[in-house]
Length: 179
Image 1 (cartoon, rainbow, N blue to C red):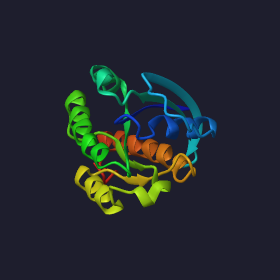
Image 2: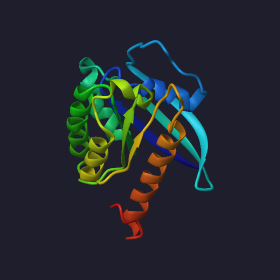
Image 3: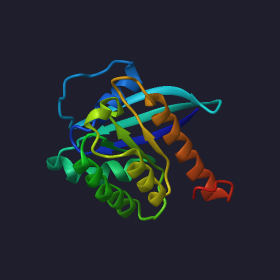
């Protein structure tokens, strides 16, 4: 069984913990409680292959930004989350991607861009097209999700496993077109 180290990054309050907890336990966390660092394990099957995800839910607050380099160094794949209800969180993730590439020392890294809180469409500040365009620029997949409604929650974690697999295959051959 293959193990995957997934790091969930994004600004404070975008729903990183809500997505992760919903995926791991099926429960929606209503109350916002700033995370310092939480670690989860879950077995899933992706494309017929049993997999174990080790998920690191990171702090979104700036006071813990110095810990981010260590998370990134140890991570294999990165779920970069913003809230569709906050343009600022969408702008913040651009520097997070730069940090991932810098720490990893390469220009191709398995990243999945996630626009969270899509159940709150009336308060939307970031259009789907903007997320999609950024993902195209980054050459990575894009998903809009909602931990509250469970929309695309499993898909987020399945897709990052696919991205990691694609990256690993592309290092050995040219089978994967993404990289």
